[in-house]
Image 1 (cartoon, rainbow, N blue to C red):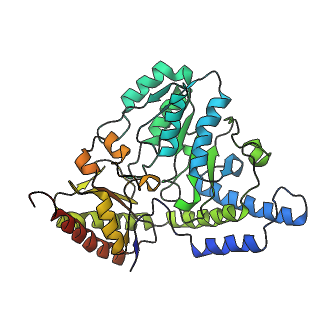
Image 2: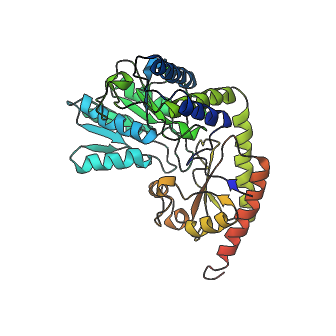
Image 3: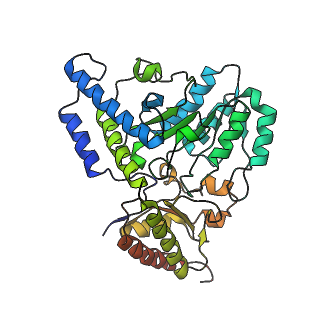
Length: 386
């Protein structure tokens, strides 16, 4: 039995998403920029997908920029904002960001861009008082503030509404990486002060290779993909019609799911998983447990154990999880996000991320609890003094 608990890395595409992608590959495979009937048919499907995603995000279809996924969108937010505002040479972001933002900021910093690293409290929440002081001092030079809505490693939910309001009051452009939020919690771009919001289809049961960004009215971006007038001259390149159509189908399904009480039931599964593991491992540390967290994520720290050993043994037993971000899970180093939160290295080094989706079942959670406890106990026997 395979129990997949790595849904923050990617989610399985819905059957109806697969069907939509296949139908595009077989039938509507024409270039949507072409004016003949085949091209018009492909364009129609792309625009229907845009409407579905806009409904999920609470915005106008014309405010959506489609691209290849969350990483490209985040890079465009940073680079495109700086290029569009040459009189504002600096940016502000956090060490708790996904590497798509954090490492981009570090590269810009090495190239001479002033980067202000936003202070956060010991639990990982943005220090709003310090953030407001930062804005009061540097607003005139800031091309962009970028703060992740839901952390991909801990599920921590930042107060995006308050952060966005402060940015708006100081006239600073605000981007949020909402890759872990969209399709999993209500998102209404019309009701929050956000200028740019990035997302990826494969986080809400859509295909990989599709994602995009909400771009508020009047927000200029300098395109980084040059070579065509697609996406209203903001992102060149022939559209990936099958992936975008699949994203539209996934967005419609997510909108319907969010209208029910599925998130409440999923939250119970996450809580029961943590309670069950802690019953067998009293020394367990639940990273970020004192902060608001999305129902998807459990970052469990097993003091003095090694995440790599836990993951290997769990995988042999059919339990698939990860050590922090999937794009860094091959690293032997503790998660920089956990370390930045002040979590001791001996806990961070033994931290494993378990993440669920609306496809996760009670049976899977119950079996995972048993296997996680057994594996942790097995490894703990080899510790000095055990």
